[in-house]
Length: 241
Image (cartoon, rainbow, N blue to C red; front, side):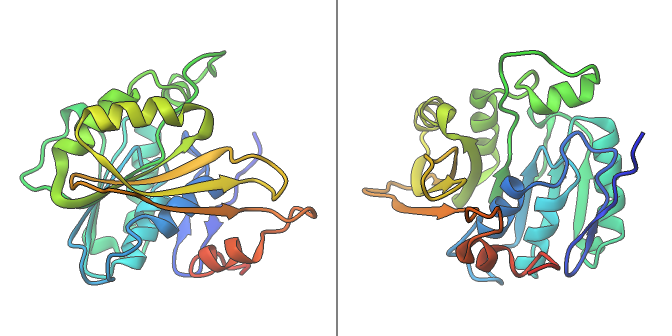
């Protein structure tokens, strides 16, 4: 088995060799953008649903310096690794990972900011590892369940942010609207300038929004290097930027 090196960020390190989800650009974009519009001291409580290695949760702990960050993860090895990553980070005193399904998660508070990079491969072959299969396929957390539980745990003036494959975005939005959530922000993520968006980052809230803010981000230049806009978004985190 090849050893997977920890992912070195500027202010913390992410071990991810035991996690069902490796550190990836999708997740890091969400961690860098979610809650855009909140001041750094406005957010008191954050929840990351399906935290994997915990990288998004730690990005949010870095950005929101006064926030207590909870994370929920159903895959045992991932939850243990996220717990270790939190303990080894500068934010250890305000981060907790809970090893349980979000459907059973009960806390005596509601959250200013909830994020999720949810499972999305609903069809097709699963991996042999049941934990990885559950993380990568919507076997334990479909969109309806995700939206219902995010809404249940979200403050009335809070925000819920996700990153979703573009070809599944309409189905996700239908579930969100059915649950009374409104689109506040839409960011379409294009892998390259000449290609269609393959991911959508959505910011949702419980308030009424007449027209969401619409943006786009192009991730790569033709030479596979990050574009200037992506570099700017990820620069607070990536050591290479």
